[in-house]
Amino acid sequence: MIEKKLTFDNPIYVLAPLAGYTDLPFRSVVKKFGADLTVSEMLSSNALAHNSSKTLSMIEKSPNEDPYSVQIAGAEVDVIRRAVEILNELSGIDVIDLNCGCPVPKIVGHGSGSSLLLNLPLMGEIIRTIKDTSNKNLTSVKIRLGFEKKNHVDIAKMVEDSGADFIAVHGRTRAGRFKSAVDYDAIREIKEAINIPVIANGDIDSYEKAQWVLEHTGADGVMIGRGAIGAPWIFHQLKHGTKDIDESIKRVIIMEHFDKMIEFHGAHGVAMFRKHMHTYSKGYRGASVLRDKINHVSKPDECRELIENFLNNSEIAC
Image 1 (tube, rainbow, N blue to C red):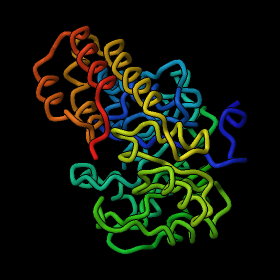
Image 2: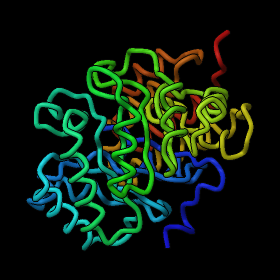
Image 3: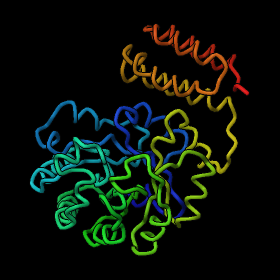
Image 4: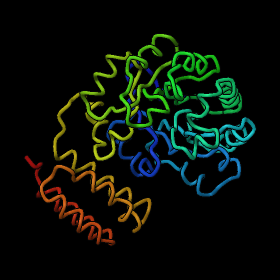
């Protein structure tokens, strides 16, 4: 039962879904090194309902992703129901999460994501539909604090009343996108107003920040997205309760990530890993030279040797 896989007796650490980044290889790495819960990239309920092969392939998970959450987006009750019925046929999924926070215009324009914050009755109906239709153990919802203005407590209470088992809160409105200051006080207000577990999200980019957010908000966990890109060892730090991270552990994690990319994507994983290595190398001497070289490498063995040599011989620039 998922209740034994995912408990909130202690703070949990969750990898947020990020399009183009949190694919199976990356999720498997953060899971191995400390994440309690991983979430698929956001999936279109409409694509799921129409059995899109590309969308179905995005659900595939690593064996170590246990528990595992699949996030869906949509605004039509019947389509959501059909999407959940498709997910019901798939094993290995423990949580179905409804995205009510994505601020991207393309998603909002379809009435999905944070657009649902403008129509709480519809949002509640969709949550109840997922809860009633799903054969998975848990239903969760990811929200923002509002669309243009904050009405976060009303949103959170509606989520709870609609049957969600826990909620993840990004501490900005949709209007705030990813630039405005995160309102951690508002996350605390949500925690104080509802009885289901609350996961805090937004600009959590270090061990110290994660600890501060947990203490300040009283949240039952933190969800980390962009803060884990280029630094997936943040989950190792949190799991082991230390702000210090040995360079040798970083090297192990980076190479594990590369190997998983090749294992899952084949030789194309070399090109896909470039953006990750560009981020991993920031702050190290010789990083610009590495980035130039890696942009022209296509063979996995050659790329692996290049990365290993860099990691074994580079130091943080003063």
